[in-house]
Length: 79
Image (spheres, rainbow, N blue to C red):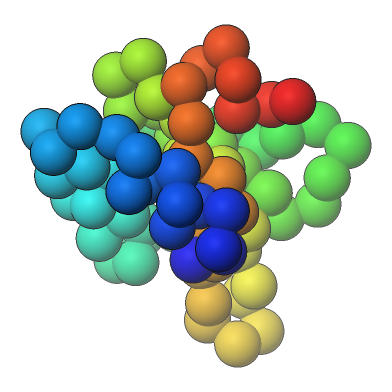
């Protein structure tokens, strides 16, 4: 996870943190779940919705890595 994502996760309430961690664990198993959306203008960058929050992450297929780039409320995460 990026430093920015770690800080954003730490700022959330405990219940939301648990939901986000569970969603991130699922991304480790399946980096492109049915509810993910590819972000326009960026290759290999996706978002997943978790309630009112979004997880923006990048998939590196060659090295089998999923890096969480940003975590935030839906109105702020794309800025």
